View 1 (tube, helix red, strand yellow):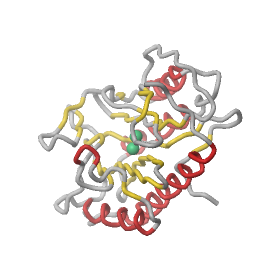
View 2 (cartoon, rainbow, N blue to C red):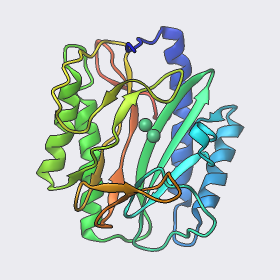
View 3 (tube, helix red, strand yellow):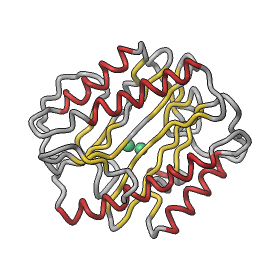
Length: 251
Ligand code: MG
Ligand code: MG
C-alpha cells in the first residue's frame, strides 16, 4: 500500500484531532498523581474527547476496551486501564491517546512521572523524549525513513537504552495505522519522505533489555527483565519548511 499525501482539508481536520489529543494530555498532566486508578484516567480522557465532539480512536480498535492505553513502569505499550491499577509514588506511566475528528486521526503518547521518581527513570524519560525530537527533526522532504529511524537509534545508544523492536511508528490519517511502518532503529529503509506525509513517530525505550513479551490479556506489552520502559509519540506533518506537530495545542 502506498503512502498517501494529505490534502489541505485533511490536514486541517487532522490538526484539530491532534489538538484534542493534546487537550487530553494537558488534562492527564494535571490528574496523574499517586492514588488515581488508570480506569479513572480513561474516564477523564473519554470525557475530554467527547466534549470536543471527537471519537476515541482506540475504543474498539481490534477490540481494545478503552479510550487510552496506560502502561506503568515495565509495561511498554497497550496497557488496558483498570480500576484495580492504582498509581503510586515513583511510578512512570505512558499514556497513549488517539482521537478521530472529521474522519481524521491524531495519535500521541507521553510518559509521566508519578510524584518523585528515581534518577534512572528520569534519565529514561529524558532519553526517550530526546529520541522523539531527534526523529521529528529528520521528518523532512529529501530525507528517507531510515534517517528518522537512525536519529532515534543514535539517541537511544547515547543513553545506553534498549530499543523496543517489535513496535514502531506509522503513517496516520483516515485510520490510525497507515503505511509506512517506521522502525526505531536503522533497517536501511530508503523510502523518501515527501511533503504532506503524516507519520506518528514513537520511540519506546527501555532501561534494560530490548526484549518484550505480550501479557495473557493479549494487549499489555512488558519488558522481559521487568525494568522500566518509556514512550513518547507525536503525529508529525512533513512540509517544505519545518516539520509541523499535529498533536499539540492550537493557539
Ligand atoms: Mg499512539
Ligand atoms: Mg502510534
